[in-house]
Length: 258
Image (cartoon, rainbow, N blue to C red; front, side):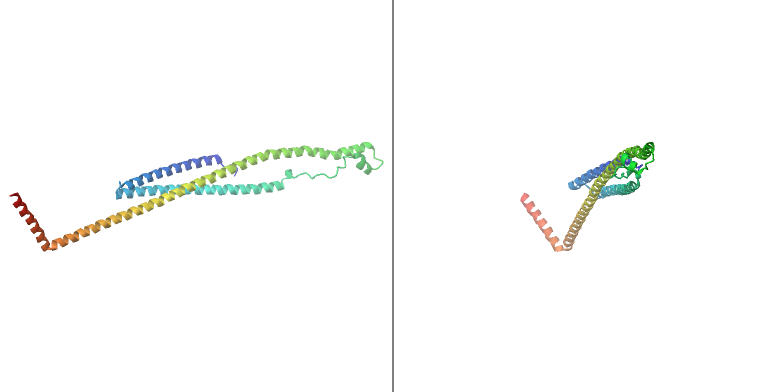
């Protein structure tokens, strides 16, 4: 918990995120070039199938890597939050059980040794000498004097611990914020890749439909030509008419030239 290499993890996360962003940009450029070639009509069916397969494979791999990194960062976020919750619970229990954090009760009445001439003198018997009274006052005053350095030591220890806890809490908060922002950016990249895959699929469907329509048109034209050929070959009277017209034009041409 306290030996978490936050800086190293953050650096690796930034490097992987930059690589994913660069690959996403490269795939976007490749998709743009492919769309331009398709719009210009400079493609064949085999080339289109090959380029579509390569793009889809690269997009699927990049989407898988992005999803895995997003899952890892989500797990890290949950672990950081769980550690922070346990730390808060532990700190609360320690603050309740720590005797150093207990405040001294305010004294509403002055201690009996603060005014030795009144209370303590009245409570002593008349036969006790004055020296014994002073010795008793010193003995009762000693615990109050001894408590003062220990309280200062407790306060100094607390002042040393609090900045460390604050720095650790701030560093964990910054790490959590960075992880959440990275997850958000990866979510955007993942959505963009999914959109590209859907657009690629729609484009492939449109091109397949156009190819099927073209093939159907060619087949229909071929069938029509075959029907006309069969009609012409089976109609002998039409063939005789055609030959008669050709012979007539030849005779007219010969007479005019002669």
